[in-house]
Amino acid sequence: MMHQGKCGMHCVAWWLLWVGGINWGLVGLLDWNLVETLFGGWPWLVKLVYILVGLSAVVMLLEKKCTKCK
Image 1 (cartoon, rainbow, N blue to C red):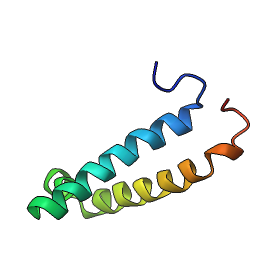
Image 2 (image 1 turned 60 degrees about the vertical axis):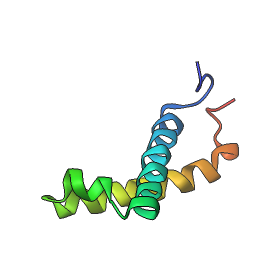
Image 3 (image 1 turned 90 degrees about the horizontal axis):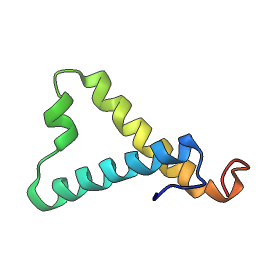
Image 4 (image 1 turned 135 degrees about the horizontal axis):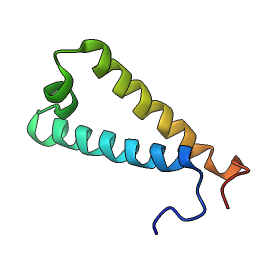
C-alpha cells in the first residue's frame, strides 16, 4: 500500500495535493479550472477546496514532525 505507516490526515493531504496539482496543471495548460467547473455554483465550496489544498501542502511540509507517522 502506498501510504502504509501514515496517519489519516497525511493520506487526505496527499490526495488533496494531487487534486490541486492536477487542477493547476489544467489551468496552466488549457486555461481550464476543474474545481471552478465542478463547484462554480457554490463559491464557498470552491474557496474551501482551495483552502484545504493549501493546508494540505503545509501538513505535508510538516510531515516529518508527525508522531503518528513512521
